[in-house]
Every structure is written in structure tokens, then in C-alpha cells.
Amino acid sequence: MERAVTSSASRLTRRQQAILGAFEGADAPMTAREAWEAARDEIPTIGLATVYRAVKTLTGEGSLRQIEIVDETPRYEPATRPHHHHFFCRACGRLFEIRKCPPSLRDMVPDGFAMEDHSIVLYGSCEECLATA
Image (cartoon, rainbow, N blue to C red):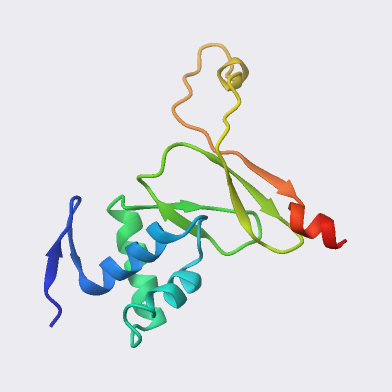
């Protein structure tokens, strides 16, 4: 039986820590499969099903945030990352973080409504794909 290890938010198993570490070490949101590939560096025998269960647990307890892209496999990132948006390259399928946030979003909220949060995904082609086109 795996021993749980204390983390700042909850008690995580060694496998859960390796999976969360894979997401924390990535420079962009990843799919569960990409996290599995990264986590195998630390735990070569880790199974894909284990990663899917851990991602569900880590998302449910608030350590990971799900990023949904239309018609794509969900991606995840650490919930501790500061607020940002995303750019999805339709040519290569990569997802990039955008560190800017439009200041006028609150102006778009209908009168009498209260905006609590927002998420923006821009779609197009990245620099690399444009250069090779």
C-alpha cells in the first residue's frame, strides 16, 4: 500500500505527487496522457489509468484546473497559476498561455449581472506553424 505524503493542500500519494509535479513542471496545460508520459520519468511503472484517476482527484480537490478546448481532449494545469488565458493552434494542436487579460471585460457584462470569472481561448496558428506554411 502506498503511503500518503503531506502536501500543502492535502495528503497525496507518491504517484499523485509525481503526476502533479508533471503538471507543475510543464510550461503549458497538458492532457492526462502527456502527464502520464512526463510522470514515467519519475515512476516508470505508473499506469495510464492511475494518471486518469489522479487527475480526477486532483481536479476535484482543487489542485488542478481543467482547460476545455472545443473538440479536443481536456487539458489541465496547476490551479496555483495566476489568472491567464490561452491560444490554441489548430495546425499543431498545441496550447499556449496568454499572460494578458482584456481590461474591458466588465464593460461587457449586462446591467444587473455580476461577473465572477471568465475564460478566453483564442484559436488560430502559432508562429512556428505560420513559418512552415
